[in-house]
Image 1 (cartoon, rainbow, N blue to C red):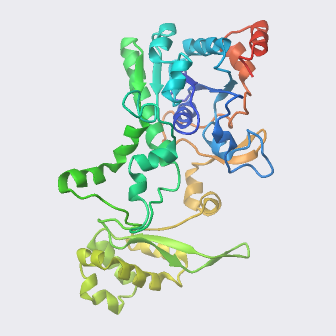
Image 2 (cartoon, rainbow, N blue to C red):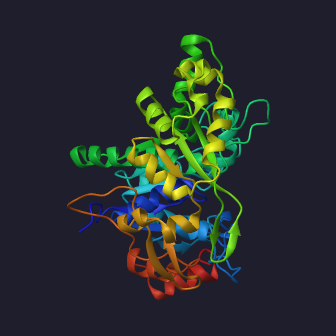
Image 3 (cartoon, helix red, strand yellow):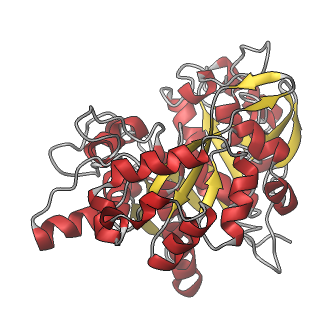
Length: 412
């Protein structure tokens, strides 16, 4: 048995933040119905990587990884009949989830005051980008927009260069779906005690800025506006990725291999010095203390790079780890899946057979419960794969009613 079996989720979200939250519910046993539209395809279905030789809306590994274990219903919310089906699904559900922009939610009649009329016990979770009030309420955006407006891009990159961001839609993957899931679980607990539903607003802007509290505190307490520092941080020296000996992969040269090394205290620094064979430059005053190493960090990095350049990256990682020095190989996706023995032994990635893309790796649950472990029940759905099943088995509609809805354009 999984911990959330019996919980019913109507997932009216798209892209990342909402679907990933719903994915966690599905992996813990909840019944999740994903609502999509053929007239406005979730753009994540069109984004690479695509399965080799495939170009359909069902071939995106990006989309598939975030939607495993869900039922998929295609519904046209711009029709009156489609909105009636949506309300019927909400009557069935325990949880309503959306990250669609507020003005669209209002146009579709899916605001909390409306949906709580048909289901007073519903827990309705909304993930507007910047909230349901304020001057930027209706601003459009997604993870790549949140990254700059929340301050991540300003802090990401190298000094005296343009901000580069974090290379991905970071707020979509961890912060926003995680906060929303915790809020929904808290509301479910409250409803279990009181029988009352609840309205949840998790503004993605506010959720995203939480991990930036050290930079905020540095400004409020010290008046310091932190800037881009590359791979460096104030608490460690060295703290960088260092080039190692090139390796071959199935006979093909790999141009670069990198090892991340970090020393947060004198004990770790001393262990690194010992591993390097106590070179003469270590005895210079400019490397004698943490503060001195920070002031001369570029030269420090260059010296360590000279030492690592001819080393095997995995052997060096093992050696440094054995000495108590934090070190890790900068791995590719292939290495994580195919060669990382630790990742294999943990069994995080689950392999499933998708109807169009074949066998592929999916992210497993990010947490484990000893008594009620979760897991993915089936691969991501094809677009509209379960429309008939949801209408008949979950909503109890007859064959005639389903046919009429299709003729009316409500079901696609």
